[in-house]
Length: 431
Image 1 (cartoon, rainbow, N blue to C red):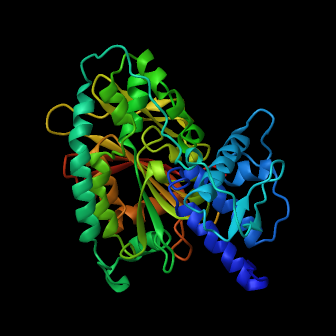
Image 2 (tube, rainbow, N blue to C red; image 1 turned 180 degrees about the vertical axis):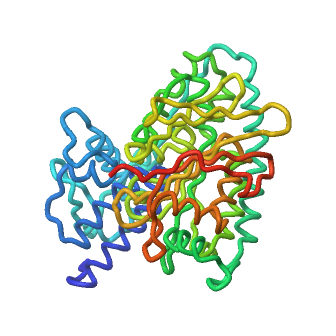
């Protein structure tokens, strides 16, 4: 069967890539999908004849441009997995594809060749989707942590509230003329016309995983999901039962995030230009190319880790009181603890406004000691006088774009207005 040359050939190859990426062999793994699409783009859009391991590690997996491939085999491991999945796809679901895609060993540039007129029959045993990893059952079944029950109850609430927010999202709440100038300036850099902004919800399950196991995950382990291979053993070592292990695998976000969504969708320009994403389904590739709002700290939204070399605030967990608090690593490790006594409920919200990883857009990071503080931070970013004061402290000019910054806001009260918020620190990021 002849496919033809030129545009027709390129279009046929693109269609094959799209079908493979959408198949259940690939779309269950964001890492494999990103790898496949990157390699295909390099060949189809840039006519690359050779793609090297270090390039793939940098652009797909977020490794430094000059990282040591001999000590870090992440590309080789995922390329091997991708080759197996491609074989399975073309043997089963894609058995009628006129073109077959392969990734040769030693060179990561995909190659296409036409399927023979009469392919040999394929054994049924080879036609099966990859089996999910089996998780060993922990031996002990201790009483569940109270946070487990909170997250179980939140699962249904999250699904319902998110569906409601998306169904009732405002389609352009405010016209540009009705928005104060400083607020309009700031959000015009976050929600740009003709360009979608990713709103990335945190992963409450992965935060709980780290709290209960005492293990700190990196963004690389999170993105390639390598931690799942040892999930059973890690849980068993921490004396966690099967119910808790199953929760770690679920997609749960914090209630604070679902609360702030409505406010974000009412920001100038947000209507029709925001795309709701869950942290577990996000990728380095998108973080390099897109505008994004990251909700949560580096423990609950591990994509924040990619920006920590530019900012000084870190978030530590207070196990006794059950909340995260900010620590300023640029000021000798100064910590800011919330006052949870009485009716004051003082909290803190960290805000960072930075260029994205590729330098092609912007990233807004919002973290807090709780839902009230995060909501207070959102109100602060929608208030003209608060943002004008922040820009003044940063030395920004009205004639120029809103400057990149890191700030810590103290929020007083459960339903604090911006006038109850205090700027504890604000400074430009490094780099």
